Amino acid sequence: MRQHEIHRKTKETEVRATVNLDSNEPLEIYTQLPLFTHFLTALGKHSHLSWQVSAEGDIEVDPHHLVEDTGIVMGQALRGALGDMHSIQRFGQRLLPMDDALLLCALDISGRGQLYWSGSFPDRPINGINAEIWPEFFHAFASHAGITLHLVCQSGVNAHHTYEAAFKALGQALYEAVQISGSDGVPSTKGVL
Image 1 (cartoon, helix red, strand yellow):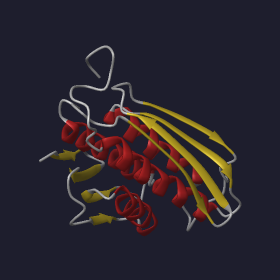
Image 2: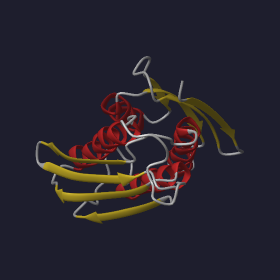
Image 3: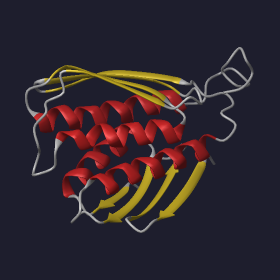
Image 4: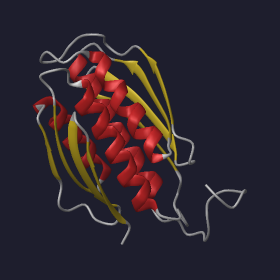
C-alpha cells in the first residue's frame, strides 16, 4: 500500500497526517480552525484519497503557524506515500467552478516543490482569518511534497467560494497525478523524479 504517516511537534504546533493513495476511507480531518478543517475536508473528499489529519497550535498568536505547519506535514506524508514514484501519472489538472469562482490547478509531481500563485484571489478575511494565510498552506504543501503547483484564480468574488475551490481543485488534480498508469518505471526521460 502506498501509505505514509508524519508526526511533527514544535513549540508552536503539533500536527499528524496520514495519507493512503490507494483508498478513500476513512477521511478524518481536525484542526482548531473550523474554516481550515472545512477546506481540508474539501481537499480530502475531492482527492478520493484516505487522509487523516490532526492539527493543533498557538492560534491565539496567529493562525499562520498552524496553517503552514499542516501544509508541511501533509506534503511530507504525500511524498512518503509516493515512494519511488514508479508508474504514476505524474501530472494532474483541474479547472474547477464553484458558483462565482473559477480556479485552475495544474501540478507536476516533479520532485521540485514550488508554488505559482496568480490571478484575482479576493483579499478579504473569512471568519476573521486573513486571506494572506491560504497561499502559505499551498506553498508549504508543494514544497514538502516535491510538487510544482500552479493555482490560478480565473474569477472569484466570494472569498469563501474562491479559496474552497482552490482546495477542491488541488484535491482533484492530485487524484489524477497519483494514479498508476499503464507504463512501467518512473515517468521521466531522466529515469528519476
